[in-house]
Length: 126
Image (cartoon, rainbow, N blue to C red; front, side, top):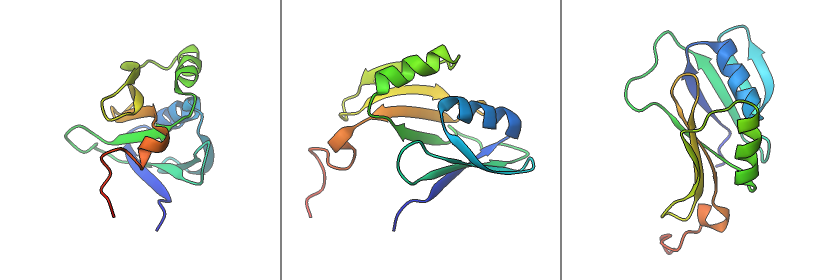
């Protein structure tokens, strides 16, 4: 299997489309005000939005987007007006992460992990 897409709930489709385009995702499907799908900058995955009347409770959805030049990407996004909750920081799990929230309070993590994304030192041996 391969992951095709992740779909997250949003309250305001126009506002969310604008936000994710500002992040650099390419809008490839827009179905009135109910659904939108984006192509990720690298790779083959897609990311979509589905309009809901009420967001789920709890901490919301956490979405990770990897970028090999994280620090420069964050500076570029800041210049576009994107506000970060956490600037790039080396984490104990060997990923460098920056964090922000989308308009519906979903956690967006921009990160770079390199080989540690799927092969951390503590990976289960086969």
